[in-house]
Amino acid sequence: MADTDATFDVDLFVIGGGSGGVRAARIAAGHGARVMLAEEFRLGGTCVIRGCVPKKLYVLAARFARDFADARGFGWAPVEPRHDWGRLVAAKEAEITRLEGLYRQGQEGAGVEVVASRAVLEGPHAVRLLADGRLVRARNILIATGGRPNLDRALPGIEHAVTSDTVFDLPEFPQRIVIVGGGYIALEFAGIFRLLGAEVTVLYRGSQVLRGFDQDLRDGLEAAYCRAGIRFVLDDVFTRIEKDATGLVGHTRNGLALPADQILFAIGRSPNTAGLGLEAAGVALRDGGAIAVDADSRTNLPHVFAVGDVTDRVALTPVAIREGHAVADLLFGAKAGIRPWRVDHALIPTAVFTTPELGTVGLTEAEARARHRIVDIYRTGFRAMRATLSGAEDRVMMKLVVDGETDRVLGVHVLGEGAGEMIQLLGIPLRMGATKADFDATMAVHPTAAEELVTMRTRTARHMRDD
Ligand code: NAP
Image 1 (cartoon, rainbow, N blue to C red):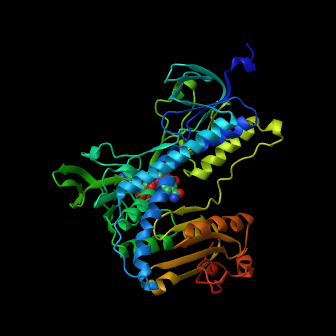
Image 2: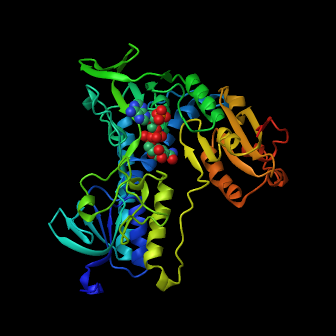
Image 3: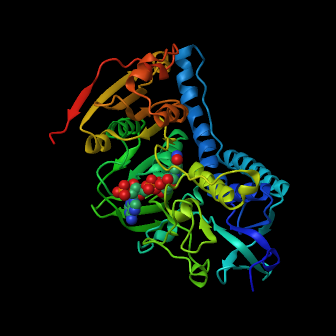
């Protein structure tokens, strides 16, 4: 039988109500498609429920500690702040519940049928809703099931550890926390817990955290965290975790015993593909379990698509959103006159919400030196203006990585307050191919920290490759 509209219950079935899924569903429905979206947990996905949003709220909460301390240098009488973890958890919960409601409204307002169920593929076009057993026949399917935190499951005592899925809702504030890992999540939580008053130890398997980031950012953050009293245990891993009456003790390969009230594992995330029926549908995976897709987010089956973390391309919310949007436009945009477009995964600006914050876009110095014959570096480091009166030792670092042959700015790296906001805007000139001369020709905004980005006249270093 030829496929007609009547053959299918929906034009698009979206599995997963996170950033990528809801965007695709809403845009597709806006283009007139019949769309159903299944989410087994809470609408909003990792970012809204247990990722970016609560994380940023906790970062904001934690940074008040600095405000209270710094205020004295500006004439304020000392205060003795006390933080109530339970109130923060409750306030966060209220906010994400509000956002979840907005997501639902957005879906339903666009005409998407949202079902609270796990959805499993039973064939190339067949989706089973486990909540009520319904079988839905879908013309197109989008898998947007995200990722889940990795755990070292073979480690004795791992059941005592928490991940980013549960750390936001700890029943009590951990006075002592050991955080395993040296990436985004580990370092963001290290900053949050330290500022909220915990003793924080970061246990990392390598010799320096933030592998892959520009070396000056790594050095700057490490120095700032050491000044803040965060302890780094490097080149080491846990061999077992024990629980006794006083709490947890993590034992390391190098013979350390690290006591803690909580141990947080932040050692990366893996695509959420288990138990989705992908084999039944014939959807191919890559090594490591991610769904294999092409530049249109299409799997090996022409009517099945996948976006976001489940594809393990760039595991960032805005990327998933854009991938979902592109799929919806590709499938259903023609009637609205929208031509298919592809997500450009190059030059993605990102921030790490440590304190101080990191912002980065484009090539690191090391990457640039590997790819370009002549690389010029412009770097500045200075005490933040606020630190002049507060007496804090906060420093700001800014660095431009420039192609010495074309003058094009290849990368910008910022460490310090507002780095995330700055790097969002810096993403625009970098995409446009701005040169160092363009930066130089831009008038400064005074007095700001960001003005240094357009006033770095003197080259710090020039690296020339011999070949
Ligand atoms: P991540 O940034 O990839 O860092 C994982 C860390 O765990 C790395 O330091 C890694 O070490 C270490 N690690 C990996 N396997 C390990 C093992 N078996 N034992 C010990 N250590 C191990 O991952 P994440 O921090 O868990 O975050 C997941 C993803 O979420 C990120 O990649 C990012 O895309 C996204 N995210 C983004 C933001 C943001 O944009 N601000 C915030 C949070 C999360 P090596 O370096 O040695 O490999």
